[in-house]
Amino acid sequence: MEPAFRTVLCRAFYPDCRCRKFDLGVGIGYRQVEFDQFKYKISHRPSFIDEDIEILRRSWSGEPVNFSGKKFELGDLRVMPTPQSNPKIYLGGMA
Image (cartoon, rainbow, N blue to C red; front, top):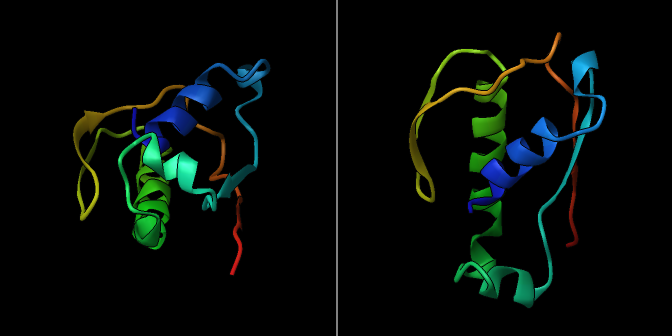
C-alpha cells in the first residue's frame, strides 16, 4: 500500500473522526528498512513526500482526485468525510 493511502486510511479510522478538524504530522522517513519494505530508494524521499502531500491536500476537497506524478498514479480517489477546513501539515525529517 502506498504511503499516502496508508495515511488516508489511518485518518479514516481515527477514533474521533466525526469532529472533522485535525492537524497532520508526517515524517519523511530515514531508516533504510522503511524503504526496503516497499522497494523504494531512500534517495527518492523528497519526491515521495511531495506527491503524498499533494494527494492528501487534493483528497480533502471532497472531489475525486486524479493524479499522475513521478512516483504515484491514481484515479477517482474520493475521501469522505472531508475536513471542515484544510488541516495544517507538519513535516518532520532529518538532514
